[in-house]
Image (cartoon, rainbow, N blue to C red; front, side):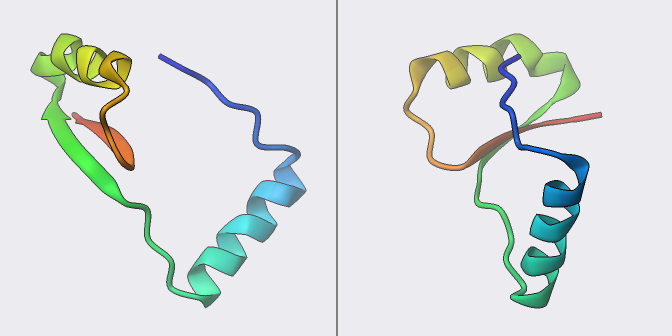
Length: 57
């Protein structure tokens, strides 16, 4: 896993309001089922993705 600092809770809530107001949606590069988590991590390590890498439960 790779974490990032996004600021305070107030900043996070303001970002979510702006995203909802402007109907912004994250770009999903690829989704992996939980059983393929190792492949998802390899995909992230390759740095060839554009957008989010999703692991579904």
